[in-house]
Amino acid sequence: MTAAISAARAGAKVTLLEQNKQVGKKLLVTGNGRCNLTNRDQALSHYRGSSPAFIKSALKAFGLWETLEFFQGLGIVTRDRNGYLYPYSDQASAVADALRMEAEHQKVKLALNTRVQKIRKEKGRFFAETFGWTYEGDALILAAGSCAAAQTGSDGSGYVFAETMGHSLIKPLPALVQLRSKDPIFPKLKGLRTEAKVTLFSEKEPLAEDTGEVQFTEYGLSGIPVFQVSRYGVKALEQGKNLRAVLDLLPHMKKEELPSFWEDRIHAGAYKSAGQLLVGLFPKNMADCLLKRAEIPSNKTAGDLTREERKALLSACTSFEVKLSASNGFERAQVCCGGVDTREVNGKTMESMLVPKLYFAGELLDVDGACGGYNLQWAWTSGYLAGFYSAVDK
Image 1 (cartoon, rainbow, N blue to C red):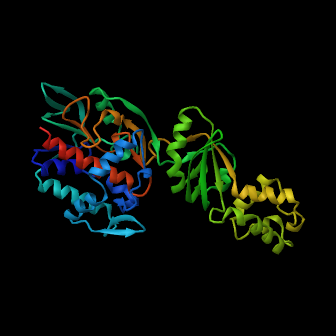
Image 2: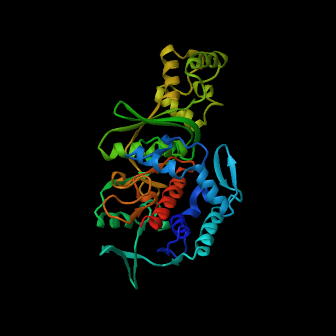
Image 3: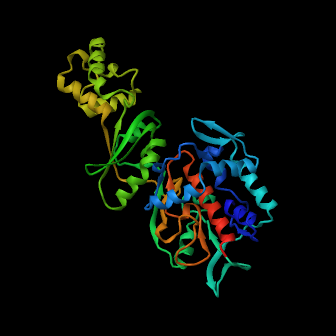
C-alpha cells in the first residue's frame, strides 16, 4: 500500500493486486493488534541481512522522520512508549484504514481477491496473469511478503516470481520464532514466565543474546528475547550445527555481586531446606528443576550445603543450559530471514539490477528486523522508495 501511494503521488497510474478480500490483512495482527509502526532507535544493528550497506542506504533515503511525516500526512498521530511508536488510537486497523483511504484518494485501483499466477516481461512491458485477466504496465513492484504467517496471505509466491525474473534467493527461514527442545523438563515448566538473559551458542561460539521475559512452553522457549535471537539459531540449525541456549535467570544482578549475594542468602536462610532457599526467586517448578540440575536434594538443609553444592546451585541459576533441536515453522514465525538477494537490487531505489523497471519491497527481500517496529519500518522504507522510483525513473 505504501508503494502504491508513493507511485500514485509521483504521477503513476497504479493497480494493486491483492489476493485477499481486503488490503492490509497482515498489518492488522502486528503489535498484538496495536501496530508498532516504528522505533526511535534506528541503529543499524536492529536490521539483519546479508548486506548491511544495502539496508543503510535505504534507511538513509527514507527513514524514521520521513516515515513519521508520511503517516502524519495520513492523519496518524503516534504515541511514544519508550521509543516504540504506535498509532495514538492503539489500533492497527486505523493504520490499515488510513493507507487504504489514501490509496483510494490517489485513485489506486485495488484489485481484491486477485491471485497472480504468473508474471513475465515482453518488449519492455510487464504482464501479471490472474485467473480472469492479464494486467500490464511499464513497471512492476513485487511486494508479496514472505511465507511467514501464511494465514494472512503470505504464501511465498513472491519468491517464485523473483526467481522467474532471474533473481537469486537467500534461503528463507523462520525468524522471530519460538525455539524447540527435546529436553523432558519443558512439560514441567509449561506456562512459566521469568526474566532472563538468553545467549545462543553454536558449539562454543556465542551467536546472539537478549534480555527480557522468557516463556517456557511444553516444547521449548518463547518470548521476546527468544524471538530476537532466533534467526541466528535457525541459521545454525540449518547448517547442521549443535545449538544451545544458556539462560541467566538472575539477569539484573551484577556478576561481581552474585557471590556475596548468594552467600548472604544462604547464611540468612541456613535453617531452610534447599527448596525453601529459592522461594522468592523462582516458582516452585523452576526451583525443583534448578535443584535437580545442581544434584541437590530439595529437603537438604541450606546451612549444610557444601561449597561445591552452593557453587553448583548458583551456576544452575545463572547458566541454565538448554539443548535446542529446531524452531517452530513458518506458520508460527512473525517474519522470515532470507529472501531476494539484495546484491542484485539497488539500495537507493529498490530497482532490480537485472531487470529494468522491476522493483522489490518489504519482507520479500533479504532484510528482517528485530522486534520493536523494525520490520514495519522496513516495509515503509522499501515500499516508499520502490513506489517513487518506479514512477519517476523513466
